[in-house]
Image (cartoon, rainbow, N blue to C red):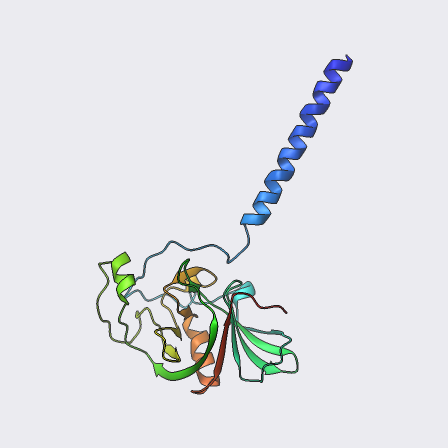
Length: 206
């Protein structure tokens, strides 16, 4: 009887430990927005207004944000997939973004050097190598993968721009650019002039 009870106890403890290990593993891997999204570009696709409506953490919102940077500064948190526009008084406008996939993420200090409404799209060589069916040039307009607006970062090839793939917001998807849904990039475009300071960080401590 005692042997049987001991066996049952060991089975119960083992099951509990397995459940705990599974829970910890799930918690470690199921962090929203931390995964790399395996998706190809869709030139010409025009999402519906419903698809472009973000909800939850990635919806544009004013948040608490402590920083010594001046109001009007843009701070990009690539790890958590957020772009902050500093407002002052420990507040910022926060936008959900898509960031560079593994091998294309970067950090640094830039300024917005140019702005463009409905920019043309010229996929870089590394993108064409991955997706050889892509056009070498696509005029700006609805369905363009750069979306409704683009803000160019210094002398780099990188931009803050819109997207025709709203489902990619919160994911690592690009070749190093930062994408927002079109309503958000239009809003940001109207708030930041050429010369705006842009800080790109791997993580932002609030």
